[in-house]
Length: 63
Image (tube, rainbow, N blue to C red; front, top):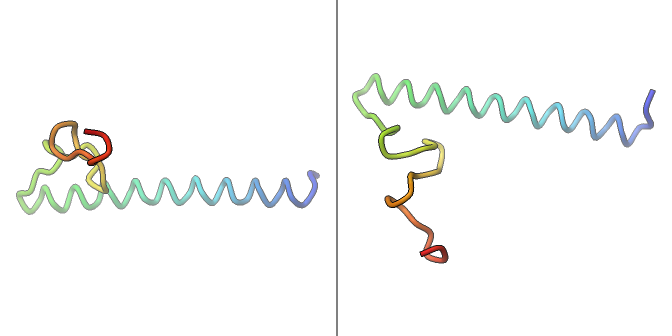
């Protein structure tokens, strides 16, 4: 059995992975609901939870 700090880090890593999976499921659910309502964001946004395709929205510090 690994030492307590290693076990704790492994628990945190598993928890982080489960949160990432949950975020993905929620994003897919949101995209499906929007498409059912006639709103197709995937043609503009690469990540409906925040990212945009190049050319549509740029950060001021990146030109």
